[in-house]
Image (cartoon, rainbow, N blue to C red; front, side, top):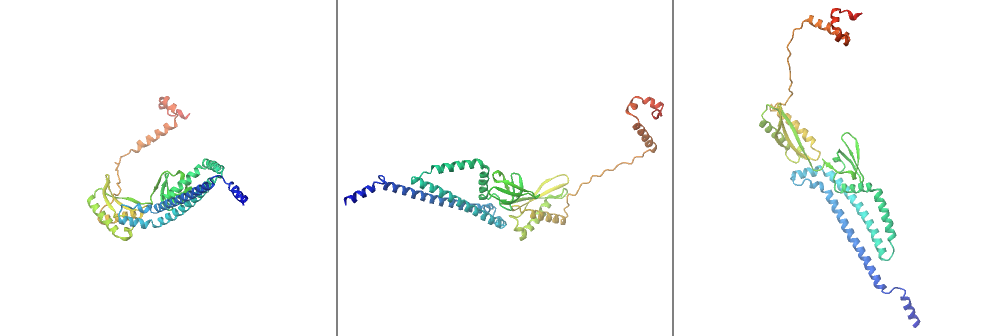
Length: 352
């Protein structure tokens, strides 16, 4: 009996003193680490979802302050673009969330192993050296990838947008994590690395202001021309087909400039981004029609004509002048300058 008690005491001496408290402390540390990781994961996922919603609704906020009509027209014109943008940002958000979860799991596992007393120094050193080498060797690639992520999240441009990127103008064909493809009006395709994108101008987002110039003959009454143009644009705005393509009623800004033969009147029209061309053509056509019906003349062309007096010409004098010019061309320059007197006395001397 006593021997059994002594064996139990000897067996308990295998563990270090205070091992129960130490085990409890390690367990609490591991639980707190896992709880902190879960809270961090929840916060990051929430931030990603908020960023997705912000990027997807960014274009709708561009119409703020323009009125109900402008907001409706912009929302209708950008409906398909917004759907594609939201799908793209949701996909990117899912990828980023998965990458973050993977990194978080690796970090938590290493922290738990360290808490249990296992050496994780060599693994961290190897990872640090590998990350350093990757950072130096592929820093341009990493820069392009990070820039691509922000381009997509911030919705600076999307497929189908007409943009100006670093001075290159064209339609966006593809937006990747590393490279963006553009096609200019001539059909040439450009590949722009996302890390090199420093300036972006997007004509498709928001709205476009169109200034239509209407030239009129300088002799016409400018106030009458303004009244006629105002009636023309008002009738255009009353038609549903064209009203849905404009954010507001076109404005006649009046006489903007003139010269000695014409006056220029300007009409301002606000349309959805990069959709103003059809409205411009319609305004020009209607302005030309109503001005012609009202008897307003176009500038036309100034043709300058000149008259010349008829001069009587003596045929004998022309003949003598021609023969003398032919004789001078046949002589050498030295003979003309030095022996001019001998040539007069003996005109046939140069024939020998």
